[in-house]
Image 1 (cartoon, rainbow, N blue to C red):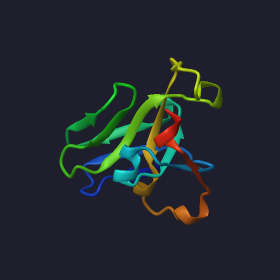
Image 2 (image 1 turned 135 degrees about the horizontal axis):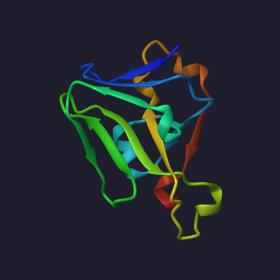
Image 3 (image 1 turned 120 degrees about the vertical axis):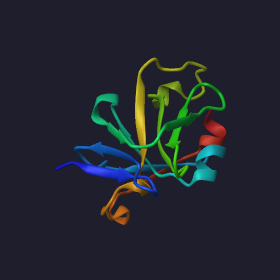
Amino acid sequence: MPFTATCHCGATRLEVDRLPEAVTACTCTYCSKVGGLWAYYEPGEVRVRADAEDRSYTATGINDHHFCGRCGCTTHGISPAFTEAHIGSGTLPEEKRWSINARLFDGVDLAAIPVREIDGRNLW
């Protein structure tokens, strides 16, 4: 059974076949302002269905933040697949991962999913 995350107006939908075991709250300046809780997936696990233009923003060229072109809701991101080994190493992984704003999952009780916080403001 697929799980669907939809933006506010419903024009952008992301589908996955499983819910995450945990979600991540990042304290970087971008994530703090959009209030996202991030569910991470391999690129092939996410299907995007959009009736509106997919818009994206990047401040550094490292992370691509996507949002609905109609309502402006932050829907997902594409970033390097960082591991603990990369923190402070000055290297970026070549592999990518997708993050869905878990707050957009329809009919999912987010309180039942553990939240991990990362200090994105100071780690990178």
